[in-house]
Length: 518
Image (cartoon, rainbow, N blue to C red; front, side):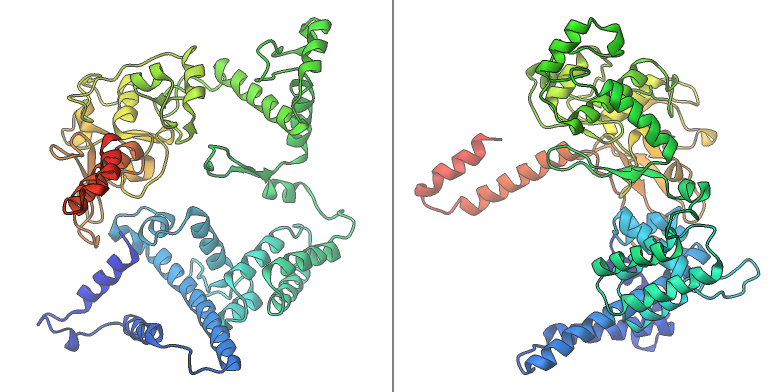
């Protein structure tokens, strides 16, 4: 579903009972947006050829200001939707889900919009009173188009770092100062000025206390890049930093836990023969950063292998779960495998892990996605059934647009168990907690079935609620990338055959090259 889908829903809502859109009564906000789009169509057709250089610069400046003002107005829309829980009629359980799925914002952009709305929009209290913005000067500057959302993010970042013990007056002065700077400086320069503001409030760091450290602690992992590498981002509190220093010093010492050296000692270096340790250290060519990385990997491996995470997480074993075909494992070749948490693992890593892994076999019908075995008649899905669901549905929630990993999801009954649903593999699907709870027969709820024919036979299909602009059932292909790649590849080859059928024989070589790779 896209923004255009919702636009179409608004247009259909405002057509009068007679079917005449001209006589329809529609809210002022909807009318103004329609006029705005008409104006944007005119602007898209207009050219700048008759503008002088000065006028051209003025046009660019005013367009930027208009874009910023629209962003400010959008924060009011955010609050209105949130206060009414209007996203629920379209089948979403949260404002974040509406933004990332319906508006196709990234998770980071959705969080930024929430932070901006919480601090710059007019919120209301439990009594219904409209409150002033938390950051009034920044809100005013954005409403005027004098600053951008990027400026606002820097201001929010700076305000978050002000110690809790700073007085409310000094905090307001700091916000006014940052808003003033933002009108004149770009976000990069504003961030440097924010450091000066913080230094003025707490020049010797004596005001920072445990409350500030608890508030600012955090750790996140960026998405994997093209080489399956991930960047760690975060801030550690002093105690965590001290513990990490000990771990990296001991398990990240030269010669220890070196994956490039099969004879490298693992575990406690003091339990190793000193001569063996010295020889391993002499062979160790890793950088300090690489040794720290390998120390962290050794700690995580010890935790996983030692059973310290318990016996179950959402019914799955708290271990690395990888779905891979027998042929890919045998040939040690193919595209990266996907874990139950959604991470991509190169085949070489999977082969290494498989040597000490517990194997589970899933049997499919005629190479389709319909699992024949692992069926059970009870309310809760068994571990084997959950593993089979990952093999069939992929490594994540099956609701369209949802990217929650299978490891953090549940076994969902397509027909609710209390309404006669069966705990058999062809009656189950992977669904995250919020989506699982949003399936039912009430208004604004989704329904789920299993596709019985076509290329998606055997896979869960989600049917949107009545108020959803898109009425057709949908299968989530986000976790089935290999299937989609192969499907699109066949389509391209078929189209290529059709386009080339009337060409000369001189082109047959390139056509044969493509067809031979099917």
